[in-house]
Length: 118
Length: 276
Image 1 (cartoon, chains in turn purple, cyan):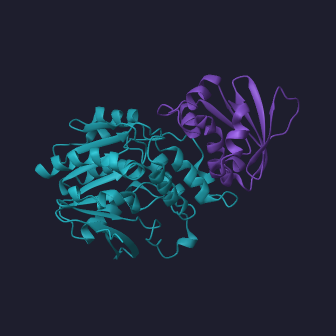
Image 2: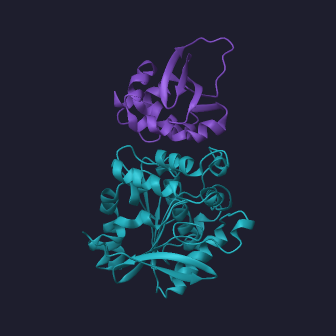
Image 3: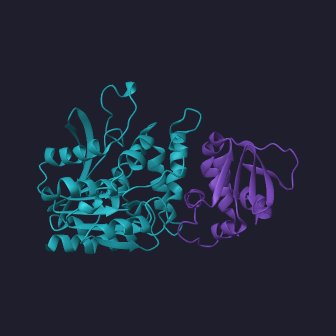
């Protein structure tokens, strides 16, 4: 799912505009698989697949594979449809710089929900 | 051009300049918006002829919200909504407008405060409708980020509201709902959440509600994870006579995110109230 994110996001100006000022790298963890997403002006410039050694990221969003699969369902079930919904259930963990995550929250939500468009 | 039947005016109540809108004639139906938003959320209820032929629908923007002003001296204090402030504001507004035994309908923080109104003012009210009512919500995120100089409050508040809606609700209405959130003043949503997450915990008292004095209807959208159907069910289980309905495919802002679907649930409730 994560592998296709760059195309799904970069081809959609309605998503890109929400991250236009974002120049950050953040981590997404799907179970034991780690990905680093490098964002430049709202475009996903690079997605790297871990494992990583001593890499720097601004914030990380970690959830089990099963949680992401429910999140990516079309349509998702109640309570599994939003990152904060997962947070309420204790199914996701946010780490790192919360200020940056909150500043770009709409963008991050749209990026991570993009697989539903596929 | 299409002109809506809604009329907006300003009232001066307890030193505050309060904006309100109304449409229709008959039984007063006072509508309370959610935390950090304003009365525009009820645009579809105010525009529904099936309702306005029997009800005088009124919604006011709470002080600090929408087109209502904050009190003089707002720059010297933090806004923090409490149960006492909120209940006094609603009853004060109803008295100022001379509303006789109004029906009060509120969503989210409004859905919470109707429970307090049921305890304290049941005899002065014709019926209560709680949308997305819960007796308490545990803090699951840090709302202080919604009021932080280095985070754009409008964007952050909008993003929080966005997620609380159903993915099945129409895009146009969902993004309209987000826009209202993006227009809130700094610290206002957070100030409302003080009531929602801290001061407004009504779990200890909710069982004392007497629905024989004032009927209580509880309608909750199934996609809401803030005040979930389970939270409302817990209230309904403790309040004898409360009528609880789960609204399929709807989220935390039913009247605003999917007006047509919501009206389908609201009209029969209002008909029942009118027939009493």
